[in-house]
Amino acid sequence: MLLQLRFCPGPVPGCAQCRSFSEEYCMDVEEIVALSVKHNVSDLHLCSDSPPRWRRSGRLEPAPFPPPEVDTLLKAWLNDEQQGTWWANGQVDFAVTLAGNQRLRGSAFKQTSGVSMTLRLLPGVCPQLSALGVPQVVPELLSSDNGLILVTGATGSGKSTTLAAMVDFLNHHTDGHILTLEDPVEFLYQSERCLIQQREIGQHSPSFADALRGALRQDPDVILLGELRDSETIRLALTAAETGHLVLATLHTRGAAQAIERLVDTFPAQEKDPVRNQLAGSLRAVLAQKLLPDAQGGRVALYELLVNTPAAANLIREGKTWQLPGIIQTGQQAGMQNFDQSLAERRAQGQLQAPALNNPVRNSFRE
Image (cartoon, rainbow, N blue to C red):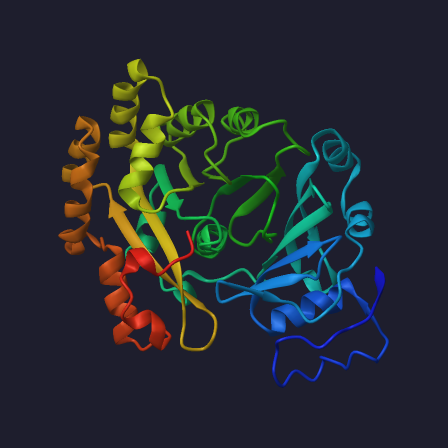
């Protein structure tokens, strides 16, 4: 799609693509995205009534191009069902593949002064676990035949990237059937040693719960759940984890212990104890993550890992989640670590920008 734009100079010093105000330049959306990738942009914010902005290293900055026609992009990118959602609800989530297999995850919404769109740029190549620097025990956890592994963190903390790296690891190191349930589908996988099938909520199934209910009859070895959104989906995920499936899922919490609390608190009081028992028996691990600016101008992840050892399982069963941070801090023999320990490791490796070195972990992130 070719968008007729006037390409204006922006806050990117030394960029040969940034032209003068007076120069007319025809720029299509692929070029906008390519420029964003070049400058390590994670998100684009496009509005019909104001200049675009992009997020680099966690900071929102003016972007060096004028606003494209958001309505035109939506008409080109949304299928009929998504168009119906857009007109009915005034907002819609979607994903799109551009030239060169560049994937975008988008969220469009109507607001007081027009239409806005946020685009998350997804890596063109599926990341590898080793490149992300996850705790060394994670590949071993992925070798489990069953159980629940949670990836948690704030919005924009890289949960989807970590899940994709887990799927990629399984795809190249195990033989099995991987079924992904996502809203929307983000990373696209090619079956290697594994058979990988991807389903998009809204397009292939009406809800996560319906898709997961069907998945239990589709002979998967591994089920990836884009998000645990409600009690029904959580209950089905726990059942799947108990009945011979490895379940990978995300949750929006800031730490590993909070993830347990969030899952349990989704249920009414009379169901909390049975859910705690299920979690104690089926949970394999919780991997929480946050991002900091790195020394190269990008971002690096810090990880907190809770492994469900017998001691951790007892605390979960008894509802004593406030004691889990102590288990994590002293559980290095089982591969566990907290954010402070992860920060110390990144610091020792020289991976952090100077301003981040002395900041307490709890104050160092956009959450």
